[in-house]
Length: 91
Image (cartoon, rainbow, N blue to C red; front, top):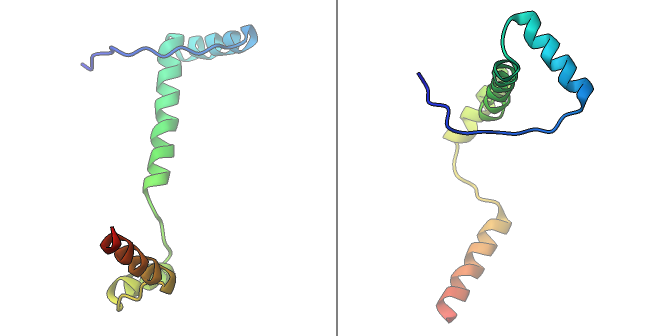
């Protein structure tokens, strides 16, 4: 069993509290359980959506081609790298 040693607080209106209490009662859990379960489910979905990239077949092939192709750094990046090296040597 996971030890629950952290606490979060949230301020809500009386009407929001009533709706949450009713919803929790309808599914047979405490308000805390209801909030935690729903919030964690949503949080996991959000995190997963930001960690995952889904590509169609043409985009996937283009991505692989870019990885396998020759490295061509942008001209501005090369210019900045050269400038940084000169500054480093000068100090």
